[in-house]
Length: 245
Image 1: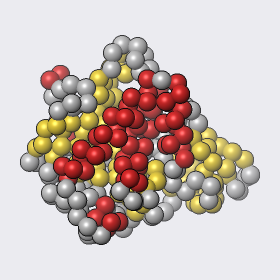
Image 2: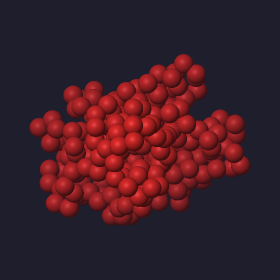
Image 3: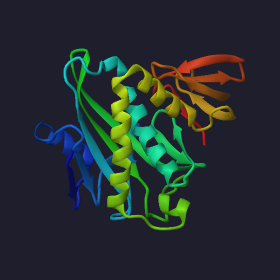
């Protein structure tokens, strides 16, 4: 594993994808300033220069190692690693399905996984991670928070990256065994944001809002929510349901 720190880049994910051939498994591209970071649903990820941790991890898989149908496990790895690392620092972090990380009602981390497939297998992935570390003010984001705001002190970005990557590497190793995968899934699903409480959601399939209770995540990655309006359980894939915060 090698870490390359860039002074300024549009997107670490874009950079990693453009240089994929020369990068190895678990190589990291980190940036002190990211000018056009990308998030889920095509959203931008804007951060204050020099204050936050913005980086991308390159993953490479041998043929037959990770099926395309199991690519959602990389979301589990990334978000569980960030959540576990934050909790080790005393921060009560939860995973907002599928892979954002929240503290209370504030978003502290966004994750974007981009996969390249060869047939039915994942050949490579770039896992983009943006963690709010030392930023104190978020003028355009009403529901954002940072590690500094949670702990009351500033943190070294390099030390944060080292600590997070240690947990990420351990979680990646868990993909190789049945028992260790079960352990990873238990950790991920055990810290779901809003699990077990009634909250408002938007069903994009039916274009309706409803009161629901998150029950957990299915092995195939879908989110199980009890619709309190109809008293039935529903399963949602990514982009089929949204949180109303």
